[in-house]
Length: 85
Image (cartoon, rainbow, N blue to C red; front, side, top):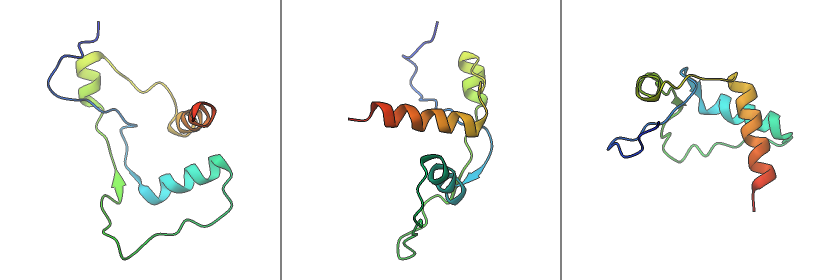
């Protein structure tokens, strides 16, 4: 049983690093956007890439990634577009 009363949150990810630029382009391709992605260079970069460690999810509740990243991203976007209000 999953214990959700723990103090610390646990965020899962793919377990590998991906740049925000590459992620944005993957999303662009999945949704069929034909325009350009425009980066506002006058703003702070924030976090230009992400790499989420899935070790804690594995240790806390035996989570393992069950889908290829690209396929999971595609399914997530499809679900969102179907369920957005």
